[in-house]
Length: 188
Image (tube, rainbow, N blue to C red; front, side, top):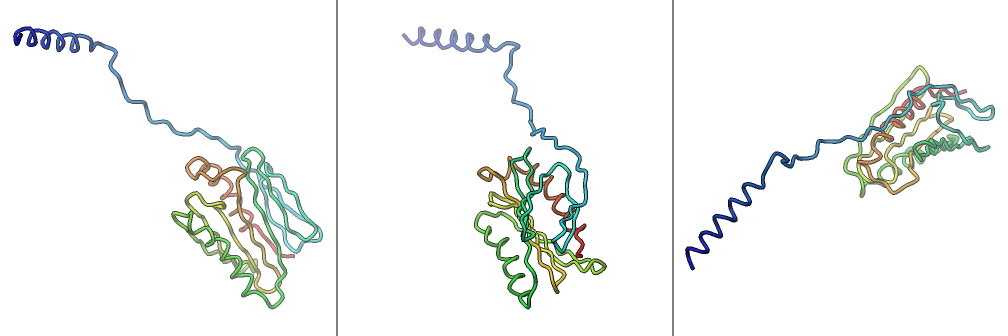
């Protein structure tokens, strides 16, 4: 009986080894998302009754309200930048607190909140841009003011559940547009 088990074991090992041929399994190659967005072309955004101008990507669609607030839609990414305007009337401290509070309200879902100060004394423009990494509802926000009369905030939102890894290329693209809005903003 021992001889029979030994012979079956040897035959089994030989069968397994002989079945390994040229068709070896290989791991899948690394794949990256190949999302390509159009090169931005900027044009001036002016509204007669609003006290500011800025440049905007021509691929975005602007829906403005009478109070100078607006929605800047990116239909090909299912994303929207919500921009709000508020006049400064001895309430600059409250407006700054509100502008910062929005960014830090995403703290629970954020892995990192990166803030960049923006100062341009030639244009009387002072503000802050926030980049939020992680599955937060809004991944890019900024506020900008002349600290005397005007205060603008902007926030990026997507029309889907946030999955940072999947929407990162779109975030990166729109973040550059938002930086351009901020840097090109002039007060009337």
